Length: 107
Image (cartoon, rainbow, N blue to C red; front, side, top):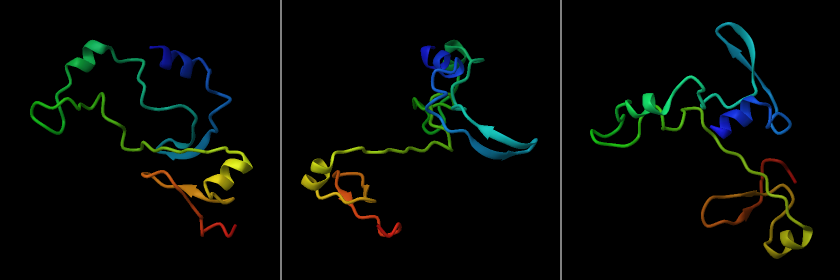
C-alpha cells in the first residue's frame, strides 16, 4: 500500500523521533510503525477469524495493536488562546473539547 511504501521508503523519517527500547536481543530502536506488515496479503487477512464475537469483523489483522497510543500538539495564536481561555502549559481533554490548566508542570 502507499502508506507502507511511504513509511519504509523513509518519507516520514524527518517526522519520527526514534525511541530507544530494550528487546530480547539487547538494545534497539523504535523508529517505524510496527503494525503495517509488508509480508501479508489481503487474501491472507481475509482468512483470519474474528477475535471478539462469533460473527464479528475485528480480527488479529485489523485490530489496533496493544501498544497503540495517540498524541497531539495544538499550536495556536495568542489571540486564539485568550479567546478560548487556554493557558501556557495547558492540555486539552476529550469531549467536549476544552483547555485545562496542567497543574503538573508548574506553569
